[in-house]
Length: 286
Image 1: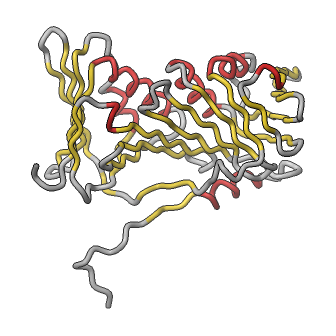
Image 2: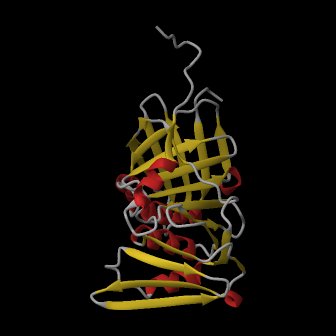
Image 3: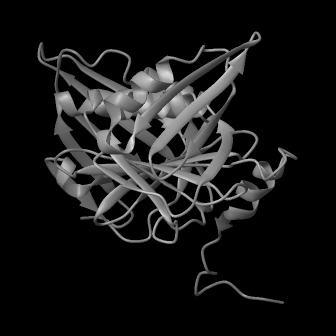
C-alpha cells in the first residue's frame, strides 16, 4: 500500500450512522476534526464558546475493509458540507471514505443499490490534534442508563431553554429549568437507573442545546449512556456506547462555578488544548 493512505468501506446501513452523527455534531460546532489511526477513526468538534466538546470513535471493526498507513495528516473540514454527503442514505449498498492526500481532499463515495455511484470531495486543512483534558475515572459520581429515558427527560424542556440545572442526591437525579416564568422539573429515582453512584450532593448548571443533539443521536442508536460528574465548575461528561461496541463517544460540557459567575466557560477553556505534533526529524531550530 502506498504511503500516507487511508481507505475504508462499510455496508450501506452504516452510512446512516455516520450521517446522523455528523448532523448531531453540526448542532454543536462548525468544524469536524478528523484523525485516523490503525485501530480507529476519531471525529471531534468544539462549539464556538469552547464550553462543549464532542469526540466519537469508530473502531476499525465498524468497517468491512480498513487500510491505513502511518503519519497521516490530522485534518479538519466544515461540518455542513460533510453532512450533505449523507443527505440520502436509504438506498445504499456500500459507502467508502478515503483521503486524497495529493489534493488535500476527504472523499466520501456512496454506492447505491441501483448501481449509481455518488462521490463527494471536501477540501481539508491540516491541523493540530484537538483534545479535551478530562478524566471520567476521577469523577466521584457516575450514573448509567439507556439513552431513551434521558432523551425523554430532556424533551420535557422547551426548545428555547439554553441552560439546565441537574441536582444529584443519594436518592434521585433531578433536572429543572425556568422559561417564560414557568419552572419545569423531571427526575430519575435511584432504583430506576442501571447504576447510581453519587459521591456527594451536587447541583450543576450547564448548557442544554448541544446536549440535546448528542442524546438524540445516542437514543437513535440504542446506546447505553453514562454520566460522570464532580462539583460545580468542573466539566460534566456524557458518554455513549453502541451495543456492539464498534463505536463510542464522549461529550464534555462546562458547568458554572458556585454562584453562576461564568466560571464554567473558563473551566472548559482550561481543559481544552491543542496537542501539537512534535517537530519532524527534518525540522531545524535556529
